Each structure stands twice: as C-alpha cells, then as structure tokens.
Length: 97
Image 1 (cartoon, rainbow, N blue to C red):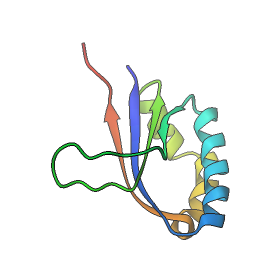
Image 2 (image 1 turned 60 degrees about the vertical axis):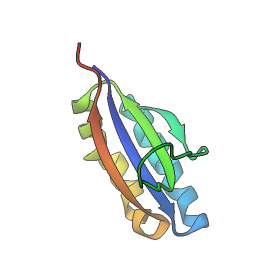
Image 3 (image 1 turned 60 degrees about the horizontal axis):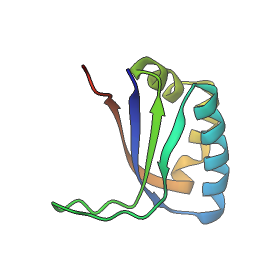
C-alpha cells in the first residue's frame, strides 16, 4: 500500500534550495517515489496550522520511503538542507483496506 512523505517547508536560501530540490527529486525518483504536491497554494480550512510550502511525495510503500530517506542518494541533498530550508517532515502509511 502506498506511503506518503509530507513536508512543511520554509525556504531559507533561494539559490541553495535549487540544489536541494534537484538532488532530492533525483533520489525520490530512484526510489520509486513521485511528487503529488510541491509548493502550490495552501489554504487552511480549519484549525490553527499555518504551513509554509507543502510537499507530498508518494512511495510504493513504507519500506520504500524509509529506504529513500536513509539512502546515499538522498544524503547528497541533506548536505545542503539546513542552508536551503527548515521543515517538519512526516511519513504516513496509506489507506488500509
């Protein structure tokens, strides 16, 4: 069943974020992931949550998402992450039938 990595991002450096995005996108694709949402308009409908840019990535399953997050490919993106952005990041299991 699919799994989703959801990230609430605040950009710190507009130039470095491009390096991070390029590396992250390549690593996501290598691990079977695909973007479902990335940086579009966010409208709060209820509650007090005020997210920055939201990114939603779908992976085939939780194990694939975990392998991506711990991978050498994604580690290259993490080298510039703290300069590029700050974020909250969660992994969510898909619908269980």
